[in-house]
Image 1 (cartoon, rainbow, N blue to C red):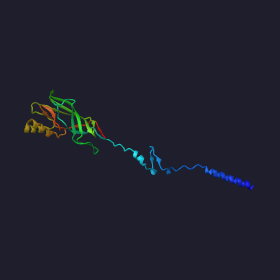
Image 2: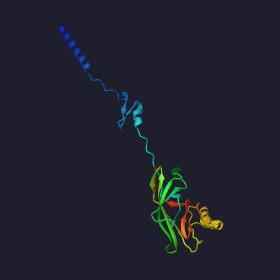
Image 3: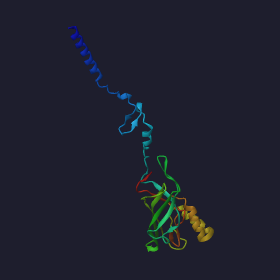
Image 4: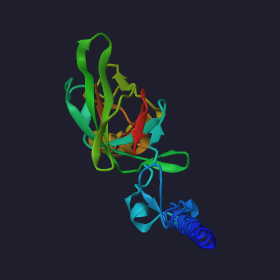
Length: 232
């Protein structure tokens, strides 16, 4: 009887021992993992720090473009002379930005930027009642090395009158300069005087050469943006 009881006890002990050996291991603590996966699939080190590989793959946030709003005035200086008689509709002209354009304290378009425009209309004396007319519009400006189309208002200059020395000019400074120049040195002096007297004005110099409108090179003209410009 004792022998059977001993054998039964030993059998139970062995059964419990086998059950203990076959018990599945407890799941590893998630906090003990050396790396975790982010939502974007990249690995991160313990404590939430990004691994060096993941950090190197991150792209910097794109900078927001500067927007030059409609209504901004672009003042340029002509690269060559244009006029009601010497120019024709559709002809292009070159210019440079006379002063920088800033947005929110940042320079959007630097001074000296190249620009170009179109002669919208040019009528020498005799083509329409009353005198001569010249209409210009700025069409593009170079920003960051690339030409960008712009939409601007037109600049219109007209001249009326009779006689070689009669002139109706846009801007009193140009008229006074032409008069002083004419007294100093005849026709050539009149041209120089008009440029000196009116070239610094926002509207630019305009005077009559043989009773037609002439805008010399370096004349300052102001165009107003009709649509905003994005500068990246």
